[in-house]
Length: 336
Length: 122
Image (cartoon, rainbow over all chains, first blue to last red; front, side, top):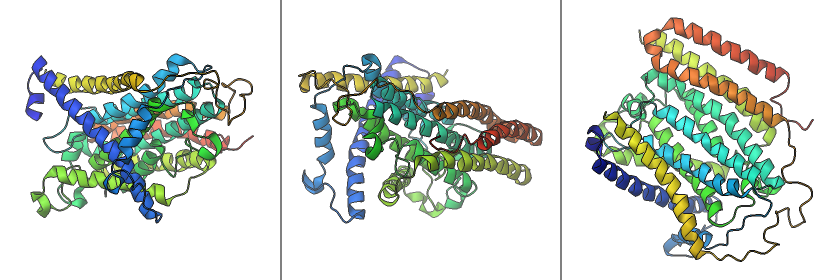
């Protein structure tokens, strides 16, 4: 793969890229299927329940059955809905979720596009999903969806600012937006990762990322107790599945991005452990990030909408800005 | 020229992202039943008949957040290239960026004082 990228573009190489892209698509779909299963199992165990047990060994085929069920459900579009936008919205929400994965490096040799604007590409594309959500809320022509969509959009744009600002410190330390360069700038010992010099940025990043994912404790858009389901009330069958898919593909993307930016990517935590292949380290750190999100969901209650907005603008944004300037001053003092 | 490859991959990813919903929803059409009735096509409103229009007026507050988002997102766009070039440019650009961010922070403090950031019903 890496050698092919170095070569000049030919149509044959393009087909090979396409093949790998399709393979990767299926890997992501497999991840989503088992992330949902794993989430239900883990939360089950944390709440002294079993989680899914019926279908297959340990209930392992539960999610596959759920997907199949969604596929054979009737697809209803309300008469009052704006039909074209209603159909378009789940696609707009899903496409950027998958497209951002193109730029994430997995090991020193494995990875797809190494864009020199990688981080900007990620930030720019991931915010397109917000449009899909607002559009879904609006096109449904339903009061619950409209309010849910608006609330979702307000939350996602409020937390996008701290999210993108919290990584500026890392960009300054590496002098690059390329995710591969950022990982290569980190070392083979855990104290050489960006985690410790950028611990403040890391905390802001994690909080803002959880909020961007609309997951507990920031899962207000879902708000089943007040808005029934938020922006996807009117969606059924596979259109609904694409909103779910987008959410879990973002879980994949954010976990991978956290691993790459802060947790050293494919680098081992101690230089002595270098014998274990980089991909394994990547997968371990990545899995921990995914587990962390599930863990949060089992642990924390949902916060109120007024607390949500204050936290984003009054706490996270000033901290993220301060972090940039503290990093700048430290770089000025120590690296000269 | 080799740089083209990276963007070819991006195009492939976007295309695959579009193709999956198109294929899944088209294939689903043969699998799922299609028996629309008038009742099924009504808008959901907790079991009651929908009252009034769906696209209601909503809180102006969302609009203020959208405005602030635009301002700070533009700031981000300025900060990213600044951060990439920071090590080469040094102290002078640090001061310049500090002035720029302070200007925007005045806006944030103003919004804060105007209680825009406090979410209440009135």
